[in-house]
Length: 263
Image 1 (cartoon, helix red, strand yellow):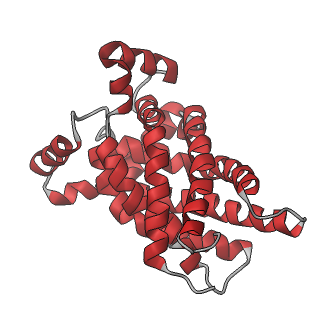
Image 2 (cartoon, rainbow, N blue to C red):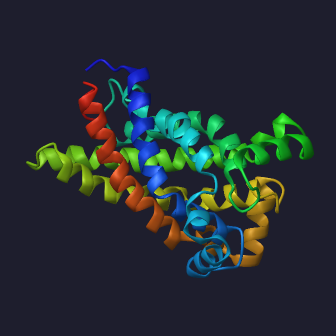
Image 3 (tube, helix red, strand yellow):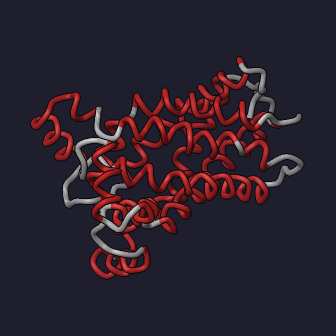
């Protein structure tokens, strides 16, 4: 069926914004684990002791909302358009990678100002980076890692979600929320498995501790081995799977209300 890219991006962005607001504390804890030697439970206790439940929820929330519409909206919303006329697994992977890579141009500066461990607010983060770290261009530091992360996440998550739905319908399953929830849960795990190494490198580069992506990769492999590229995988999966499990069925419902049909 013909696609309506603008409406599809808005529908996806709205579903993502609602979902990401609910799960923002897990995103904050994931970043803290990846940029320090602490564990997720220890990080949660430390943050709660310092500022209570609000400090667990509020860091980077403004950037999260912008990211939902501008990044996830593009990544998920443009997938049907990128896939028009194609149906193989390879084409699904390529379509997901393309929309993910495109969204990375917006994801990078949003992620820079949204790192909750470094700045008091989104505005303070943007001003500090632009003034003290090399101008506006510094907002795109580590773009290679961000692009790789977005492409891998989008490729693995969207292709598996679409492919699993297609296979289930072929086996007799009916389109609906139960199918969306099951496929979303599986695709969240697969997407995080695809993108975890790039996710770790992206966070370390954006935190400013290791310089370039290649230098960060060498440092991680030398000091932590290949396992270091999957550091924080458990909290990342614990965050990713519930998010996708809620996000994709919600996006599907919003699409139906908007007359866009299912993904």
